[in-house]
Length: 545
Ligand code: G16
Image (cartoon, rainbow, N blue to C red; front, side):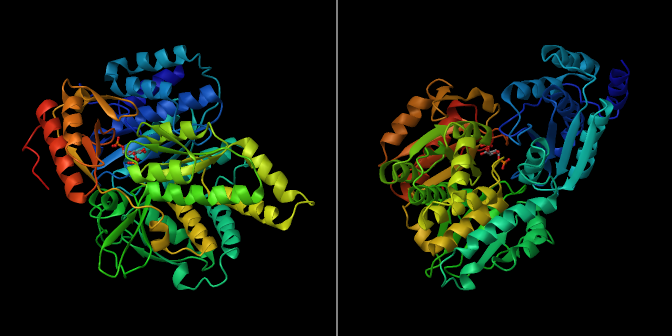
């Protein structure tokens, strides 16, 4: 077949280094950019097959998100804008690791297993972040698509959630929105402005001001692009906009969350609201410093609490009986889970790390709020929930309070990017909620107090020796590791700890929380030592903090 000849010919321009093996991780392939050219070409091929199979547009985003500038990666997007389905993650790994001479066999194997009609048209949307390697790597994706005769649309520089949004808009024939960047800004900003009109009338310009750390990445460019649509209802001071600093270096959501300190390159005045995006703007965390100069972080757990409280109140006002749940991971602070379950009385679910797992769990409810503690999350509304809200908002016989609540819910739905966690959309939603409730960042922070916690990384020779169960809360291998963690945890009050191999970096992650910061720090260190000794640590032994 001519298509396969073309694949053969073009793939020789994107050869696989012999022996290199990479796995599809938490959010796609991710490693040093110099190893990724063949992966990108092959993901162009795979996206084309997925498009033929689903008869829908598929997305390919070139980004390594929170990783350092020299890394890159690729995320595959399914028709409704969600992460690609797990079975196809397996195909992605097979295709990525087939040696050069075996590529066509691996490709034909997928075609056969999935009974793909090769004469079906294929459409692939491609986007990239601001890394210097992204331009040539996204060209490799486009080459892969054209080698199999697919059509592609190159969106160029976009945030990851913007590309997810475009794919969903395209495949819903515009029902979700217009598949353009302008359409995205218009939909989100109009909804934000409608919500802002509802704000407490005494909202001052100070309260409309927000400092944003763009992580020196794509999010900064896109905030600039969006600003005019906000009509000064939100006034943004943008820092780390990429004009001088290095991507994700000492800045961005991951740095702020893990280091529990402000990014460099930002001016923080005591009491002022600030937020940080990550390198592809699918995560956001908030923070402020108090008058004593102490840093306060409002992470994904605090965001989930703010949003779910707001939605629950609106549902009560609207008199709507819809089931709302919050989905978290093992990283969720114990205090947040207690607050949600015991005080707010909402259902809480815990899944493995990775937005794909949280998204899936959230789909089981009328309203599923999902957030990882690292700030990656969104809200999903079922079709039934959206219809009930719309009916109420349009019911001429409804009383004003219920109608107002239903309209607020409608605009809330429109400001949210339901396809995936989106820093820009989350920021607009949070700002609207704070304004409507007349709430300061300090009041938001005071909803509950986080248990002190610490996250560390340990280098081991092969992180796959660690296997986990119970939504990653317990280690089943290597032998003796979980017993060691259990013994260490017992030495501290209100303590919890777990370890898991990262799916985006070559490290084992260690999480610990306890009654005091000293206790959390020492537990995290002790558990790191156990990992180092029992799971094949490399380099120097972890030192106390
Ligand atoms: C990705 C995933 C997130 C995950 C994070 C860290 O985020 O989308 O769900 O929490 O990696 O994963 P891990 O602990 O396995 O390294 P991003 O923003 O880097 O794409």
